[in-house]
Image (tube, rainbow, N blue to C red):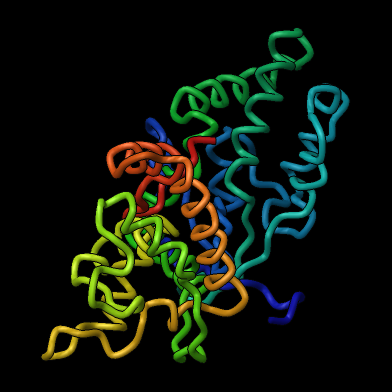
Length: 300
């Protein structure tokens, strides 16, 4: 992608702005996942005039943040970020200006800090009042979630994140067969289940049907969210009840296969130190809990 070409907003519409109290700010999510607030409406929400709002460099907002009264309270790279608004293409195809969503919270905190230090001019106090309304309307850790909700991005966020994980772990092409599960894995598994290995009269590669269920439980369900579910979809059982290929043949060589082997190594090490099946399952649940099909989101 051309680094100089404006990114397109894939989510967000005028009909669904970000509502904070009585204030409305148009919000977008760009194609690279950046959450953006419209520059003009953000300035309006702060109770500021629009002079130069639509010009590269931030215009009115950059001048305010860089003024002598507020600049001592502006931390880190905030001033540079305000002076370099994001240029993007709106869903309607128009060129637009905006700011990464957390800038609003950062700027409000700077304004309120300046007010508490009696550094603001009287004509700037109304901006501090607006900042207080905004701060009360959202927690800093929640601004991304608020934008996602307003734009509808939350409906696809988990699916996109899950697909990114699956793309790292699973391959669409069958990997060349290689022996991934060592004999020791099955030897320890049989021991913990109280079954001789191999059973009398059986070849060492013979496996009772329940071993497949145990392998899914011990290994594939604990690698990453959605891995076992997707493996069952791409590698379904045939009419005879057998799978056409082994699950591990669908793992990617650069990520999925190494992750599988590392997990297997840890499981075997854990098995060696356990006396029975209950002891092993208790340790396994503690060390490597099962992964579901949804992505846990960080709060910060």
